[in-house]
Figure (cartoon, one colour):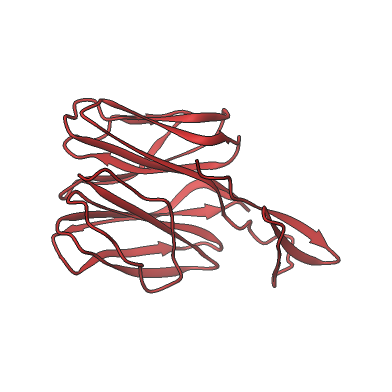
Length: 236
């Protein structure tokens, strides 16, 4: 199980502080009370299955009402029918160029630990990685997809943010079980990823502080790949 990770805002003497779960305090140089919240990772969990129509992903702890859940995953041979658990899920973006990749999201309305990915009709791999985020409004700003067969860089393409603080999320899938390097440019943090010998998936995120455009490339050891990005606006 992956422990919950979170940051909580604290105000002291006109300074905006960020108190982390491990007890460290960081200083935000912007003390404006009207500035948007900073998106923060709370927890994450991934799971794969094979030749099964439904995939259950069990989070380490119940997702909290009001937080954002993001699922990146797919089925190798069919489009996902839906995602359920915790709220009403919406497909942000789908790319079916070679191996398939989806990004789905919901704002949590009912605390839950179990997210179900529906891949009815699949006879091959079905997979998904769910992450929970605080400080996100629950609305998508922009999306982008790309696919290809390069054995060098995965050219994910552009992730664009148009508002103040935003969560920029990127996901890459390769059905050959390859490995991925670190996206560039920008400071991207890897999430848990997953793989079962048939597919490999890795996800990354960064927090933008204003309108930005990232033309992302990822070193890659495999062959055919699919990629998707979505950006989510911070809470006001």
